[in-house]
Length: 152
Image 1: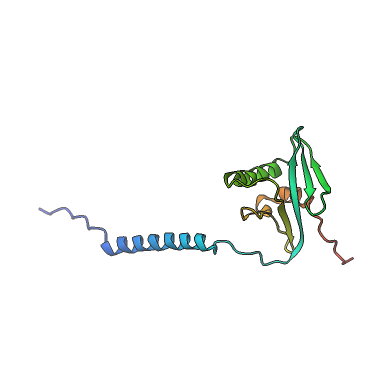
Image 2 (image 1 turned 30 degrees about the horizontal axis):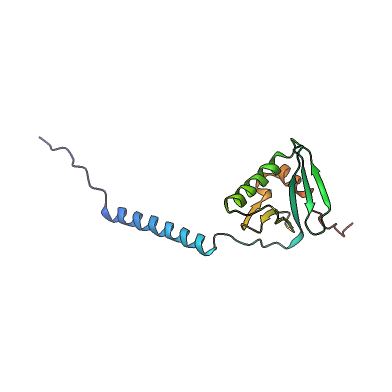
């Protein structure tokens, strides 16, 4: 008669090593978040930047105002520009949670590599617009005057 094979215990060393690895990863992520090394500055040169206020109108439109001189950049008709409206709602929600008013403009920045970012200087939140696709990038590109190329 043969005895059935006994199950081997899982190696204790492997469990301890996995636990240490998970703990070190979590601690590293928390420290990086606290000291701010979790964000990397853009490496491309800034080619255009504009500070803008987005003012809701009673009819549902949004007036885009150049914060530097108070001129009207564009009027976004009611029921249009869903991505832009959603992006602004998210940024406004963060401001509301931190009890920050709507008087500080948002900054739209274009880089030499074609990227666009929308930044809230009050909360430090930055959204990389190109991550949401070419169509959504074009929506914000209309609001930023990019320098014209000098090449023929």
